[in-house]
Length: 347
Image (cartoon, rainbow, N blue to C red):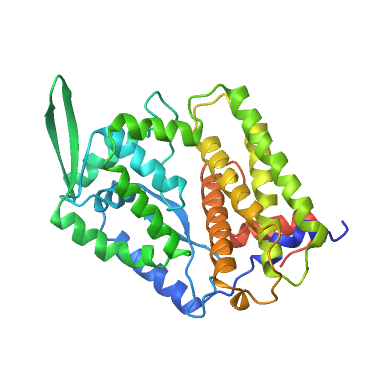
């Protein structure tokens, strides 16, 4: 098969240098805390990306994280470490997943927004059994009681010991911090307001045909943005590579989601729609950027825009991969497969 620079544009642009000592230490720590878990704790392989001291980041690596860690993360965000109701807890965790945190729950659309019944049916009881959280039935005026979930002092210590250092190693840290701040602000909203917001942003309550039209409209605008960038792009400019590659992966993810069908209850297609739309937003802002040969030489405005599109691509890859829609090509094995498909070779 002929070498196609357009197809390889993003793949080559995402090869990273692996800091093996850091990786080995991470795996060792992962094994160390896994041995301390209960035998019935279910785990799932997810991806973690570790930044190097010079600002680069290495290819995401596979680390075992327990599926219920998202509950702990959510409960660290409110000032009193407490979240009222199953609905609010599910929404907070779904928003964190949507915005790139490696949370492995699989959400399904419901009247009250994305829900994963294992959160309050399996994960929370397991965490409570281990003394990491506590639950309580809270009376509500003129309503049925709701379950409150609170992170205990033991749970906070456990979270800080086991997860804080890995969360600190996530790429695009300023934007992950901004996401957590945005989630914190949602605690001032009513449950109905949070549900309405999630429905609106993720398009979880529209008919499949309406969602398809919206998704294909985003893909079409991404195609036009690619055409605009290609008319004046510079092959030596890494920002061009990132904008074009991010847009191409977003189009691929949208088309894969549409091919799989939109009449199912899985929230994965909605996560893809939202993040692809965000990729489009930042790609349009970067369509006519000043070319640079080294991203460190760009001005602060260009750096912020570049970080924004790279972060949103990261979120799209995390969700597209988690829900089996499109394989993330930042993953080392995924990149090898991508190269084989495009040029019949390996790295």
